[in-house]
Length: 169
Image 1 (cartoon, rainbow, N blue to C red):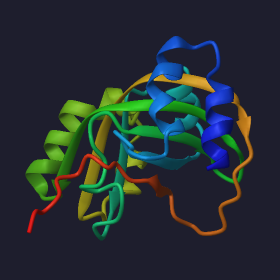
Image 2 (cartoon, one colour):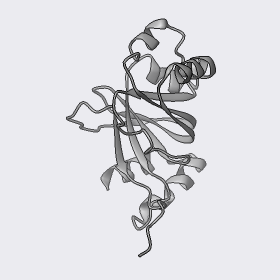
Image 3 (tube, one colour):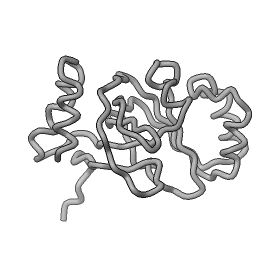
Image 4 (cartoon, helix red, strand yellow):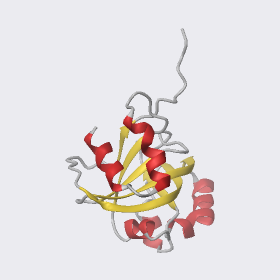
């Protein structure tokens, strides 16, 4: 996977990320999933600066990352219409089927960490039925990695984890 080689090169010198990504070289077993998130400003910059510590995705249907992202997964931060410019680790996930009570909980508990103080943030998401919230850490700005993406999805699972429970027959 050429992207993995570029990622490893981009994090060279960062002991945490070098060690964390080292299992990807074996390409036999993946202990975590690799996700690509597409970000617009100002939220991308808020994450890269460490101001935004919770990433959210709201949707009308159960699209990724809903119930498909887990603690320990890696999220690549891609500029909308641009390159991958950062990497971070997901440390906690919350999944909501939205109703008035869950909306209240999300707004009360996560507004500051989402950098979502502007009422327009909430208005743009009011038609959503599902929400995924992820606490992120170990955010690292990397040299831009070109990544061509031709569809409109804001979230793509590039590599699934091999740690999913297997059904034994």
